[in-house]
Image (cartoon, rainbow, N blue to C red):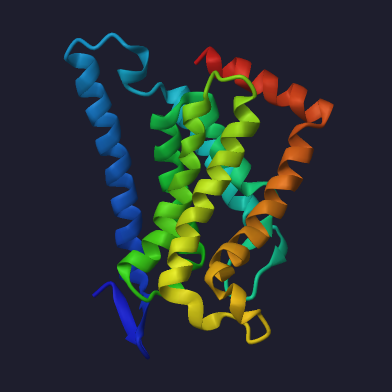
Length: 231
């Protein structure tokens, strides 16, 4: 058994965590194998070839950095969610550098890490877990669609943050409305999940954009992009 049932919700046990890690590894291997088969079938588009080791290494380092930064919480909401130190940016950055294929794959790995970090302690249903973790954090990969676009780094990041918030909001409507504070205006109850989730997503996005636009940071990111373009 991969989880334990406690008072109507589920808690992932050690077997569950192990299975989750194995699934993540198998998914990543499958993605790489499929890409390799496309290349072997005669596809000459660069994006259809197997991922270079340098790309995998770079993406892995970015996700690892994002995971570490996710523990540095500037502000934490009472029922989940927090303003972290730029953790979302480094997930979205992978998509911006390498496109949606790599971006979504890296974001999916990050979603599993986030679930392991906190999600396995309280689960109501599989769809709730998907909305709060797998769908929400994987959505950060939409930044990949802005690769090569003018101002794509900032626009892609902001769209990724909004996309993540959509899934959290859906989960909020379906599972978390009962936690709405009593002093929250009843006339605005319909927008409570939106207000709650974007109350921590938007501040982090604002802080991130300010940091990214600082001249030294902007220059450094440009150098990283130049390195990624040569991979």
